[in-house]
Image 1 (cartoon, rainbow, N blue to C red):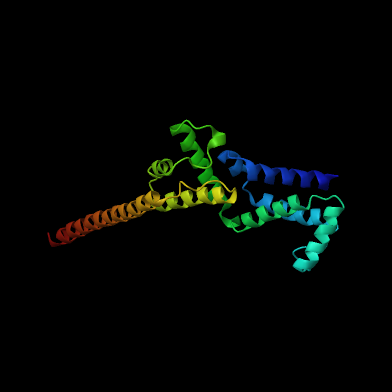
Image 2: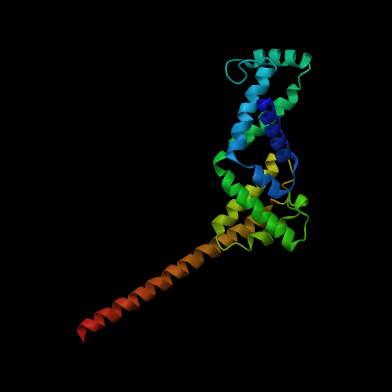
Length: 208
């Protein structure tokens, strides 16, 4: 009974993630433990359907035969496989889930504050210009690019529009990269001049 409750909870979390457009909700579900739960649920569900060895020992032909038999017994085979697809898609992003959560929360905070957008409409971004305005608030170009890519990854995962991922954003990011590099170079040069001045004062003090 407890196992069935855990399986139902995990499937509900995956369903929430796969269908919600509220970035805060998605961020709460992007956790490694949920991926691990989904992995256990998949093999538990396949065992319950009497499909043994799926993704382990069965060939694709054997898997099709056993899944067809499970379908005839009344099991929802497609729902189980769809959940597995989503899980495998998330698996490739497993080590970036923390930064993706931060990116989603950051984007939703901006969208709801600046555009007065309801939280449940935060994804996908409505226009390329919206994302570009958000990127202008970052002091670090690298973080801006990573966060922007994380929002796009979520849209791709959920089969949402990525029309906002356009050429103007790329042009802006190239400019931001050069501006950031020039800013760093200027800071280094300024520090170097300050250090030279201090060295000169020190040398002159020994001459006196």
